Image (tube, rainbow, N blue to C red):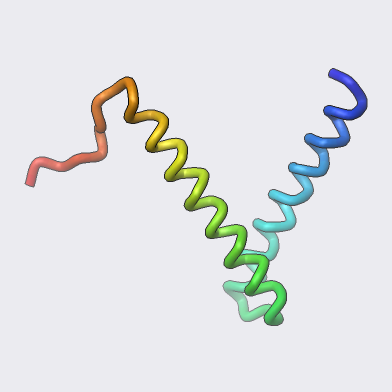
Length: 68
């Protein structure tokens, strides 16, 4: 692994941890900018989950459907 890859992965990890901290802080009534960062973080997490689900459906059946 090159030094550049380590720096990039460290930056991504710092953004993820920072986003998580902002989500927790916003739940406890943080300032407006923290609530904004938390909203962006939650939106990105929903997008990543949706993309993961849609790419997983292409080759297998969906196990999340219920038989009500």
